[in-house]
Image 1 (tube, rainbow, N blue to C red):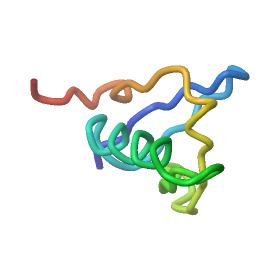
Image 2 (tube, rainbow, N blue to C red; image 1 turned 120 degrees about the vertical axis):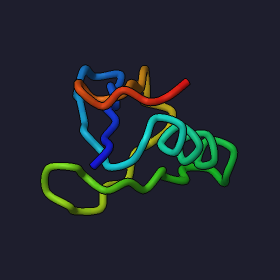
Image 3 (spheres, helix red, strand yellow; image 1 turned 90 degrees about the vertical axis):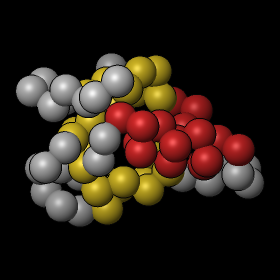
Length: 70
C-alpha cells in the first residue's frame, strides 16, 4: 500500500493511505472548500478515517520506501 506522511504545524506526523498527489489533491480541495472543511483521509496504521484541517498542514511527502514516479 502506498502511504504519505503529513506533517502538521504542531509537529505531529500522520501516515495516511494514498500517494502524494492524491493526498495533496484532497488537502487542496478542502482548503478551497467551505470554511473549516476537513480533508478526509484513511490512517495507514489503523484504517480509521481522520479529518485534517488543511490550514495546519506544513508538508507532505512519500512515506519512507514509497517512492512515487515523477
